Amino acid sequence: MTLMIGQNSVVSMHYTLKNDAGDVLDSSEGKDPLVYLHGTNNLIPGLEAELGGKTKGAAFNASIPPDQAYGEFNQDFVQVVNKSMFQGAESVEVGMSFVAQGEGGAQRQIRVTEVNGDDITIDANHPLAGQTLHFEVEVVDVREGTEQEIAHGHVHADGADH
Image (cartoon, rainbow, N blue to C red; front, side, top):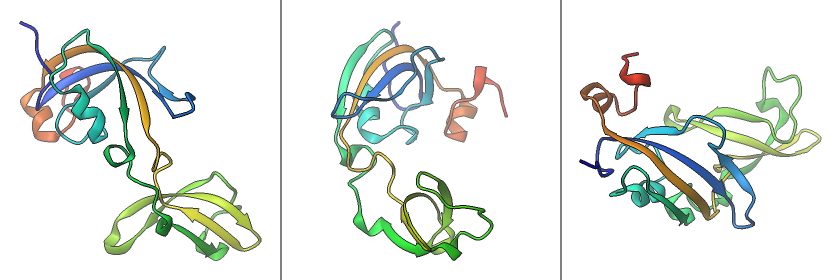
């Protein structure tokens, strides 16, 4: 019996992610396949929707728009702050990323995009926000999630507890 990908399926897949220009942004090529628990928000919504109903051996391409990936680019997430905000950092350089504590204690990844003297421009958008993502996917395996994996909302290596 061939299992179709559905709620609580454990899916193993190889993928290559490209941007609109065709540049490879990420890939599992030469590595172990990506393994995730379907239906538990472990993937971007658009890719998870594309995988639904597929079976082992399926190979497909999918273009995922920003609203089904990492969202639209939000200019409000770009701010200029004073260098004094980076207590404990010896230097602050473009490309560095930090975890900032936001309202209500929520943590958010921020990236430094510009340094101009003591003025540091930070961006809390996901690096792929606003981009259409192009995936080449091959489903390597599909199995039912274990009771514990389903309860925890993620896959355990070799079905082991952690």
